[in-house]
Amino acid sequence: MFRQLLTPVGDSLGLSFLVAILPVVVVLVLLGVLRRPAWQAALAALVTGLIVAVAVWQMPVGLALNSVAAGAVLALWPVMWIVVNALLLYNIAVKSGRFDAFRAWVIEHLPNDRRVVLVVIGFCFGALLEGIAGFGTPVAITSSLLILVGFPALEALVFVLIFNTAPVAFGALGVPVTVLGAVTGLPAPALGAMIGRQLPVMALILPFYVMAIYGGMRSVRALWPVLLVAGGSFAATQFITSNFLDYALTDVLASLGSLIVTLLFLQVWRPAPDPEFRITDAALAQEVASPVAPWQGWLPWLIVSALVIVWTHFGWAAIGQASIKWPGLHNAISITLYNDKPYGAVWAFQPLGTGTAILVAAIITAAVVRLSPSAFFGCVAKTFSQAWLAIITVMLIIGLAYLMNYSGIAYTLGHAVASTGYLFVLLSPFLGWVAVMLSGSDTSGNALFGNLQVVAARQLNLNPVLFAATNSSGGVMGKMISPQNIATGVSVTNLKGHEGVVFARTFWHSIVLTLLLSVLVAFQQFVIPWVIPVVGG
Figure (cartoon, rainbow, N blue to C red):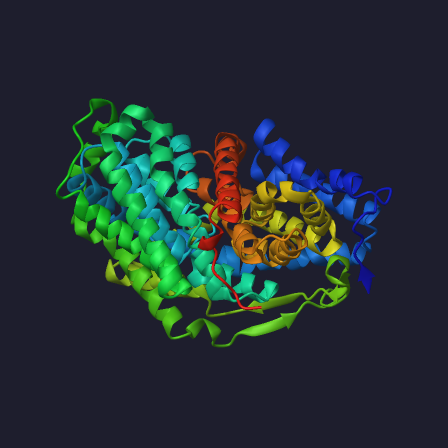
């Protein structure tokens, strides 16, 4: 059994941290500074990680390559299986004219103001898609619609990436919270409640924050009522559902509530016209020429929403599920930081998982809109032509995340941050941030650093429930700069291969929002500790 090393560089935690962070630095520099395509940054980081893991952390070459393979397979199934089928649904909507009809509905029923469209589609509708599919597909689909109403591609992608934070912690019917409870030994409902006392604050801020970036403070002043309604309705529903109903339903109910309330509000209130932000003439001209009734633009999204909810309610995803212990990796490594606990490597293969549900929804949609078989398979071919580079990128980056986990590199990073004393209070969100930036998954981030947050909190006499929840809340801020998320988002735009440009524009917003969360966490720990759920024992 390979025993992970925590301080392999001169038996110094500080020096070991500086070497351990090299793969992360490679990703940040290649994407953020040199602005290289995401697959190149992921490949370079993976090569760096392999060298560091084998040469410094003394991980056997076979184990290192095996851990990368395990991550790459997880990237294929379920992650990219979900993404590919969601993009297929999008292409069916485009081919059948339903995406143009959706744009027509937006133009017909919303004010002629791109700022309002940004809030309704980027924030409200994007949150609904995150609850259904996630893994970057909300970014791809909502940015495409924003581009069709006159947004430059780069602006559309940056704004929806920033919006794609608030719903992430409760995505996939609360799986990130469930995993966090499992790895920390803390009650998942209490953790869900605590996350539901952090992220609603961020959700309330987000519409104002993005509007300030896009239209300046004059736009914030002009649109504050709808910004307050959109963010406030999402935040209130997120808080109520996670604290008093069922955290598993938080994402779906909050996004639906925000979308419905905001649309109803816009029937009684509209901002003063502003020529600078009117929908482009080209988009309006296309709307007139659309042969499909605007209401039919909702069909693909209503079908997939209903089917995924029903699919999940009846537990069809568990049919045929197999828990496969990864050969040569499962329990072949001991986690030094956790008292030499064997490191499991189990691949949960669900042939009828969420990706399959979305595929069924795509087939049903194709039948409802009477798409011919040849047109359907044309959409399949187009989807793979769009997604193949994103698939490779995600396999590389999740392979790197697995390598860092199993080699012990990630645990050295986490242990170093947890050893900073009370500075840990401000750095805690950045542990989740790093984990999700690399893996693209809040679930993976919680599995990696959730228990470490609890151990560090108890050592410093801080509240473990607060800091376990902070790992998840901090992770969602790293989602907007995850190469996996960005690669999927750009796959249907003309910025494919220019992920570094998107990353550079988004990076500092990610840092600012994570720092805001750090301040909130410190405030909750030291000023209003009564807001933290009480857990017995």
